[in-house]
Amino acid sequence: MTQDDPPLTLARLAGQYGLKTLDADRAAEKLGLKLRRGAAKVMPWQEEKLRPELARMKAEKDYRSYRAAQDAADDYREHLANKETARLGFTNTEMARQLAPILKRMQDETGSG
Image 1 (cartoon, helix red, strand yellow):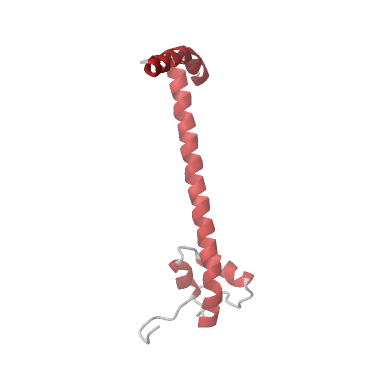
Image 2: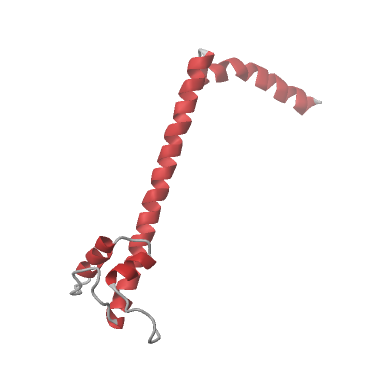
């Protein structure tokens, strides 16, 4: 850190990891550091302790948002399947039952040809 750099604060450190100041405050509290506000200057030894915890929190946050996106996509796919079922008038299971003999015949033709 050069002389021109602004002092590293808890809020700035949280921002570097894409977290909120409150998250960084919780991490500091968990580690037993006496930083109680976002504007509190973080000493280098405190920063050294905080960075791994903040990185862990960021990874956890990213995983939660990834899972939420996956769950939303699954819900959307289910919605599309239900919509398709309503349009066709029969379920996917019924369609598979109806198409199984045709598929089997096609596989036999390509296998013996």
